[in-house]
Image: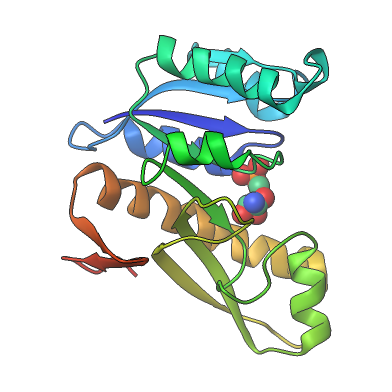
Length: 203
Ligand code: GRF
């Protein structure tokens, strides 16, 4: 499956997907890495490896629609079949999300539906929960909403601060995301309403 990855920053999840996709039997091929921020470190990493990259700087577009049209054009030019958001920090319009319905996935650093949104680890620590984790889900118009494809649990340890917790969760993200993309790309899941049924567990 021809897969594009959208990033905004560091791109460590993108790296994990790229590295997984290098395996010969991996069902997804990374055909484009696009960033809305031209200075994203992840873009530099991908460029250095000769991967197909593109900056679509949202600041160059007067409206969100114009930005999304440019992104759509780039995705189509790469004959993208599946989009993986990896630390992509722009909310996409319902129209764009609808175009990629059940063909666009995202990773979020919590056990959804808990702790949607930004500053996740701070809020996890403030809430005092003892287990957190990460979630890969299909994208819907609402932020961090959508059918859940896979999750991994991560313990919150005494003495954690947002940085130590983020690092532990990130390590789990790097395992979960390639496994979840593999499930989607190999067609081993189906949607029943807003629930994903998996024919083979990954966690
Ligand atoms: C990850 O924790 C991801 O779950 C969240 O933002 C972070 C992005 O990190 N949405 P990276 O750019 O993949 O390194």
